[in-house]
Image (tube, rainbow, N blue to C red):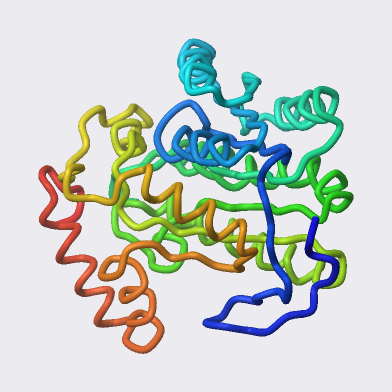
Length: 292
């Protein structure tokens, strides 16, 4: 690797390392939730740039279809079935990758599930499910990958959301899990300021993917149909391109989209009550919104 120290300058809130020229060719990248959406798009983007990609997901059929798609594109990849809410599955994912390639350079914690229900109506098991998958999945995978990433001075990536900065009504469990991931990874970064470990927290805005279709309702069943206009959102391919670029530049933070992303986060810092009102009004206008 061309990065030999953690010295650098701060630019727009990110540490920009001197002589950073991170190349992906020959690197080993693990992507959880890699069978669809942003995860699969990330696999394609990393793979096109020469990385060996390991994708994981719970559904073996969809995972194998995604692997076939990657191979058809000429991308070197392997697939490991894993439910990230289970510690042993995460441990197995990391171990199988290391056994196969002998190194791990990038871990992308992308697996996640959303929800859409008012807290007063929500079964608490829904919040536990979201924390188990979104937060604990990130913790488990990062824990077991960390020794290998320290060896390669590699990268840990957490895919959160604008909900990791701003509480979104109807998404209590989702927001809580994304806030928790951000706090966890910021602390991991701080603990490793002198080890060469890179930690990126990436927050896509509303991105076209299947996460809203699989979002859990108040009783824990998937909602099935997305209430938002997917066609007007950032594509998962564009989000993946920007995330991979941020990994190569070893950025600390990436907030995607302007109005619903960077502007909203900045505005919330100075005028939280105004943002609460704006977000409430927007979310309450969704079809069949749980917020009134």
